[in-house]
Image 1 (cartoon, rainbow, N blue to C red):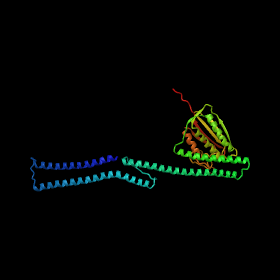
Image 2 (tube, rainbow, N blue to C red):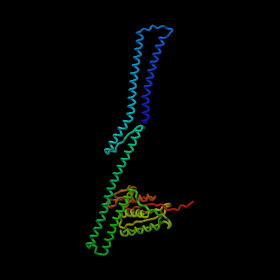
Image 3 (tube, rainbow, N blue to C red):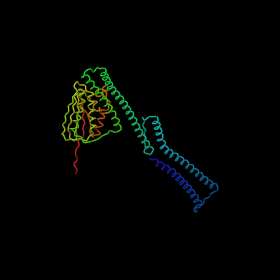
Length: 381
């Protein structure tokens, strides 16, 4: 029952009960007086009413009046106390719960539950307070998780920057000390330094892009891209990098020349680069091979990037696109990596209206798939 209804019922009873009692008392007194007059004025029977009997009758009326007043007072007090207690409990009980809950929150304890019954205003307030507690707890848990992820990211980036910097420093010292005393050694040292600086540049770009993902400020510039021209350019760019690492690139485009997609060319390049960087990182074969295949699958263009690396376990394949997910097989921390490369891939493709997934076999390799929607002209009616 709503609090307003309780108060109205309470005041109604406080007013109604005295009126009923007063009416009953008046009715009783009136009935007694009428009986006495009837007996005194009766013409059929002659009564001998003495002074003692008259005084006794008046005494009885006074006693009856006192009894009625006493009974009315007791009933009024009992009614007022009952109604007051009824209304007080409807207010005090939820207020006590709210006080305990606010004390828990003030002390930083969010692991409690407010059990609320009823449908009055205070019960609704308690339910809203419980919903607020749940959301505060979710926010606190999200903050703890975010802090943990940020610490892990800083640790990963620090480790991954230290490794190439140490390598670059070592090769530069080798050149300065004259260790690279042949053109072949010098060329190998320079290529290694170039690759290591590229790794550092990629890590810094990932860190910058990660901050934009968290604030939903990814700078997209969508345009119509010719599938054949765009992916041919990407393949040439990737091929140069893979050649410096001794990895063979096999590229095949099975899409017709006039097919277009609507996409941000720079961000799709980032997708391809992140996937291939991940493949390079876990390449364990003497002769590394990466294949890129472009296929037409109806309303979408499907890109397949296959490597012959160590592969990913079946239990891990569903989680490799989660932020900071690592496994001993697929993303071992000793191999480096910030742990956000593939999560960036997933975010970019979802923002393009596409998706990404993977299949893998341990010891054989991994295939990464992603799709982009084709651009289609809509005829004007």
